[in-house]
Amino acid sequence: MRLALLTIALGSGLILTSCSRTALDAWPSQPGSSGGVGGKGGSGGKGGTSGKGGESGPVSQNCTDHASAQNAITSQYGGTFVAVDGKAKQYFMQANWWGIFAQQSETIDGLSFSVANPTGAESNSNAPMGYPSFFIGSYAGHATTGSNLPKAVSALTNVYTVLSTNASSMGYANYNAAYDVWLTSTGDPLPSYQYDPGMGGAYLMVWLFKPTDRQPRGFNAHPSHTVRGLAGTWDVWIDNSDPPCISYVSTKPMDTLDYDLNNFIQDSVTNSYGITSDMYLSIIFGGFEIWGGADGLQARSFCANVL
Image 1: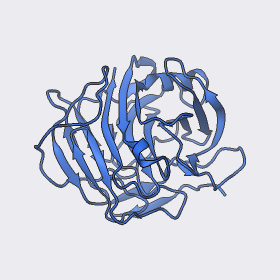
Image 2 (image 1 turned 90 degrees about the vertical axis):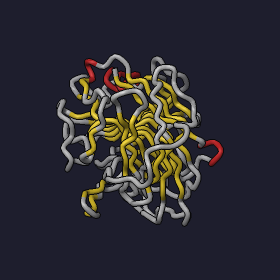
Image 3 (image 1 turned 180 degrees about the horizontal axis):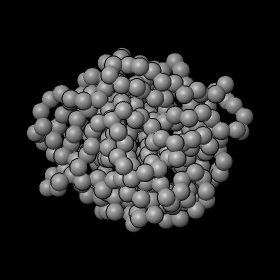
């Protein structure tokens, strides 16, 4: 049975399904349906903007953004801008519980956040409960400053980024740590009402690990693929709908990925996986797709720098 595109009218916006599915929901080696991670960005965080120390995880040598604001989000679609110290640059942190909301919350400390799931809620469907995440770019009416996005794929030099987590201390079941990267057909920022990259665009996902009984949409087209400039090997899952979804999944679980995202983008272009050089890099999300549990899960640091 395929995971169909699910569009739900909730609150003030449209919420879309994930680019993932359960491994138990098998289908033949033909591509799956359209859809994508993201959901509604939300508005308004809770709490103050001053406080202690910024992110607690490692900072990349190539992406050194630091923030010292503290905040807390307790609503289903809550979100807040996070200003980078000493730069005219912002990130946006979104709660994004588009599947199930059972009083989950997020505590933000600079460019890190932790998840609380006090009820231990779990999804009873193929779709995650949500995707709490940071992003840069323009999404759901929230445009971050200093992102240098959208930018033509043909003009990209480097896209340095890091996502550091405490995943190994939590186990690798019922959630992933993943980038969700949106590429569009034009250089215009997405309008506030659009919750996918649109026709002629693409989703690119990078999973630090594949959780138990969960897998990306589509089929594992290229197992144990090597990517120039990156260590390890990657299973490449491809869904050829429009927009397509290309997911690179590390064959060895990792807590931290500090890399040049442009290596994945150009690898997909070179191998004709679904991204083309005339597309535009539009949004970079980094966070967790969560199907259940995850109380205490942490994104210890996040940073993205588009050159």
